[in-house]
Length: 194
Ligand code: NI
Image (cartoon, rainbow, N blue to C red; front, side, top):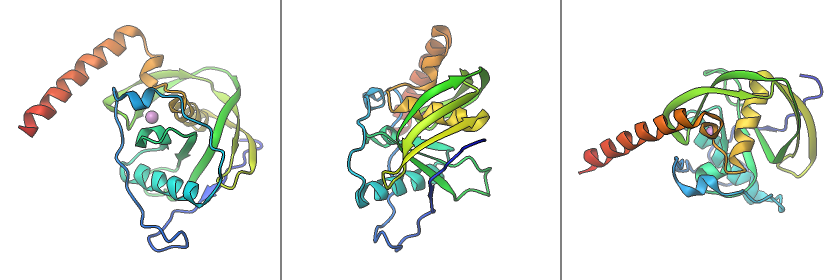
């Protein structure tokens, strides 16, 4: 990946210099309307932003997931975190603020799932290569290229900032089938509660 500049967010430990107890946040799932809101750009790059990104990283690792966008924990701000390393080698989390796909090329189809879309995965077509503009947690501007799996994760997570889920890229038939399946899951949840 030529020209990739990844801001690394060290995996935080409880009691580190942020003086912050890590909070695992609740992950919001479809069809919650929060997931459909357009997230606001971050304008203040302060300690609270780092705390939020740290919580997001921990929530993602706990789930476990490859990436997480702020709207998935009910925060309508343009923040994503991800870690592409295979299970067992994770710990170097990337945080991007106000990320945008500014260029995309090629087509690739591969399977995707999402922490906000329960018990479902499907093939999704994405750009094979993208150029992304973003900022680091300190507000430094970034401009980098990504391809393959990295490009896919970026497109999936950035979609979340615009209220878009991977199921929106599927045919309406597949989406309808998923909604039926989800209805069943939600009914089973209710039965188990009572
Ligand atoms: Ni997702």
